[in-house]
Image (cartoon, rainbow, N blue to C red; front, side, top):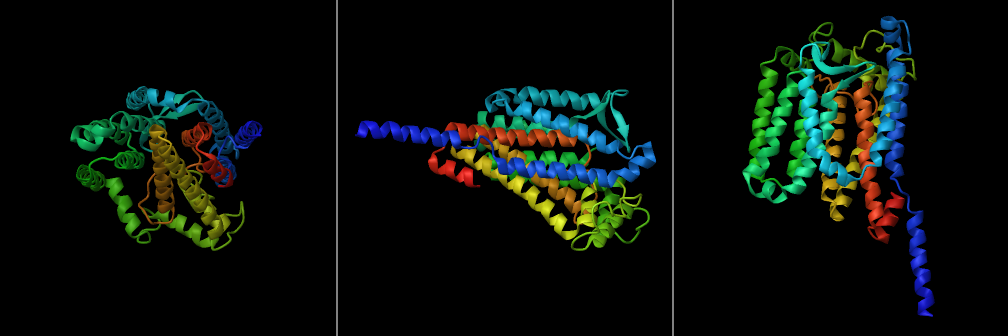
Length: 398
């Protein structure tokens, strides 16, 4: 009788494994919801500006949709790549990123817009190498922490080597100039090294040095210092230096609780600069009010939390590279979202950072899709590794 019952039990476990979803559909659903809503809001925020500049009100919408399709296609391709291959490719990818950052600075190669040289023209598409460098750096540092875990935790040199590479990368990005991306990249890398077990005294010393260097970069740069003073008092010169922030605050004020309705916003119509890019959250606040703003924040917070949850599971399963990648991606998404929203509502000085999944910007959308593909791949490998029936039941419920 036991010999009959055991094959039945094995068959039952196998069938339960087959019923286990191969994807984290909650994460995928939240991402698709934000991407779809972002497309709608880019259309709402950009049509008046596009019609004035190009004569085609759908100019930015079409370009955003093309970038979204490219991002989804890239995400599907990246999802099929095992994490072990990405671990081996990390050093080569960061080298590629460094070369692209150098190429941007070559006269005649990099494209300049609004006083910044950040793009490499590739026909119909402009490549922003700093966006992809954030992804490459996360993969590289995750692999370094796996290879040099003991060295990072016990010696200064183990901590200093990736920091030296990070400083060089940050300087190249600052030369574009792009202070916001530098802050996100540096903070993400520091967070990953902290989670990797770096000596606390060394980490504290480097954090202090980074804060001093960042403060000096702001103080000795007139336009950055002007943004700080504007942030401290956004109403002392609302028609000149404080214009963008004051218009964003007016947009949130007009939205009140439930908003004025999709398409009915006024600020986006030649009042609020960069309404479809850096300040798209202000347009959401005006048209959907506090309810819409909180809904977007909750979705972004959920994706960030999900990244850390996936990282914690990977660490419990001994998949350390996947764990550090998930932690790094969570830190990156969380910080960039916080900075963008903080700038929109006047909590932080104005900085040119897009809102992940929502803002117009081909490179930002493509990289955001690749980030989710990596998180889904890590989660998929966890499910395939067999973490126990209790873990499987928990995954299927959450």
